[in-house]
Length: 550
Image 1 (cartoon, one colour):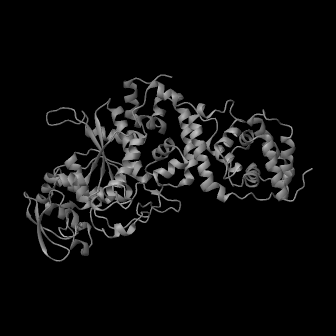
Image 2 (cartoon, rainbow, N blue to C red; image 1 turned 180 degrees about the vertical axis):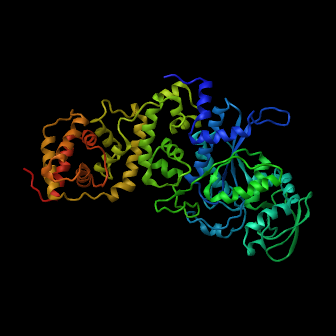
């Protein structure tokens, strides 16, 4: 294959319907000649992602960085290489409003409710503060994945004075900002609302109290402290933070943000923050509003509840690439995010990876694997061609094998069985498959083995299993998966066994031999597990039905 030249690639990008290019096309319209400074010099377009470190990072946090990176790289392709930057911003000056459910030493956090997250002791005992711990977890994974980003924390910007000019600007436009926000609030909230949240000089808590602007240029305000005393205090140098929607707008203007996506739950925030950004002399960035992830019960994922998947959990049972693949797909559609979707994501990733080199450029730009390669800057001819490899065994089939072997199966056992399917089953020659062997063992141990129940076959199913056993007796270890699959099909189609459809026959095989309601292509499984071993499974199933074997 050949890599398309730059002109052809840009032309395809300009007409691509893939969502990252749709986003990049809108951004390019904002800067038809590229983003320029006051002297006309080309400067980087700034992409931002936001993170609230009030709980442990989960995949919903990570996905925003990945999806934004997809748009960033699409913009670079579309514009022929215009410069970009990505800032991962942590809102760690926010006051802790509740103690997350999945955190140790909850009492320590309870004692510090209301204080900025970066000024609360770390309940894990490993970092300077709770926010520093959670920020480190996020950065560790972003670094592991190879993202090109700059980490910026609110506490650093507020405390260092880097936001001081922007804070003065908020005070100058205090009345106009109140005019935007007050109509959106209930009457009781209007009475206490302030765009500026002072930090109490006595308790250190972030206060949600009305304020009076004393001197906008000096940054001085007046407010009632928690004990009722009247305080005059500067809001500069970390002595206050801004209310969420005002803070977001201030950040867009102060940093010069050009693109930021967010979840559907922030739709109203985008509207109000956009209005405030204009008041402050800036503009609302371009951005996509994506649907939120749901847990296995269809409920919204919450950091405080801990009902989402952590990054570590996904990587215990699936690969990094499968995670990226799943996050690429249909960002504007609600999707469940739980361990049950991992196996399918792994196999679909490899299916799309195998297709990539043979696709025309227009289709490549819609292939998630193309964007995953580009996330770390890799779109060379060799990298695209190398994406065309495939796994000799699907992850789903691997899980079925491990499920039959049991919860105590070992890597060595799995690889010995893979020898029935792979000519030279050396893990060193199949590193991607070797990774998935470990993932399959973990997935089976934690989720499959505890639920497997092999039922006894019904009378007609038992007769069909006897016929299958007789057919397998005529095959040897070298019989192909296709020939084995044909034999299974033929038995299922025989009227004497009374299956209404082949689906019923395969379901019977899965439930009686594997202990699951779903399963693999049986020909592939028999080839992998071995003809003799499969016959032993049939004998065990027939014994459960009380059928004596001759």
